[in-house]
Image (tube, rainbow, N blue to C red):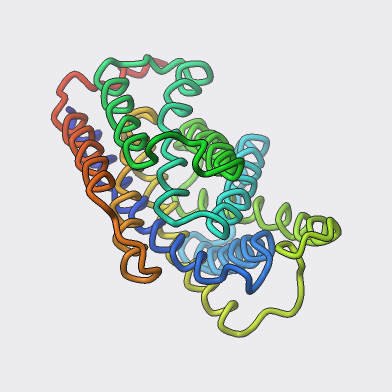
Length: 299
């Protein structure tokens, strides 16, 4: 495995682990505010903070927008994925929602082949398949136990894989900081428009009122932590292929299981631990698989 691949995986592992911490904080807000409104506030805060930081670090030139349609696609994918996943966190156990979302690498590998022309390499396929087996062990006996709510993390996984593909597509067009600003800048207005629309459905879960200050504080924490996480994932994706980075998402299950036990008193049983071991084994296999290579780039 090339040094750039190893570095990319390390960045991605740190980013995905940080995302799970933010997911746990989001779950603590279940019933306190609309998940769409939470996502809107989280990304609006991120956009404002990133704009200030970008101006300070790179000046006005840092706001040059390259590949606007691709950047809009990244923002839309993140907005949709976050809204769906936040909603699933409100109705499913943290580890369950996280585990179901682990179809992301499969979606990403397929989309990377279709949209980016990246080959479906055997080590990546084996690692993804083995890790998905671990997910199924945790979800025993099948996804039907979670009811139709299981569709939400699956839909979130699909849209998040589009974000990963988008990151790869726009790699090199701007700095990592600018990339994070633009994804938040495009996601936030979409979510700000979506929040009142969802409230009009009459579903109590999507009602939008004046939030408690603790909700605002938690959203601010998630904005900072998740922005750092997406920045790390972006850096990882630009250093390694999208299909190589994708399996790193499985670390989220370990972090989610731990936080679920620590904060929500959900104790992983023997089957959950077995599934986690399978997932770790898949990650170690991918790490050690020297066959994982990016094709040489040509002009």
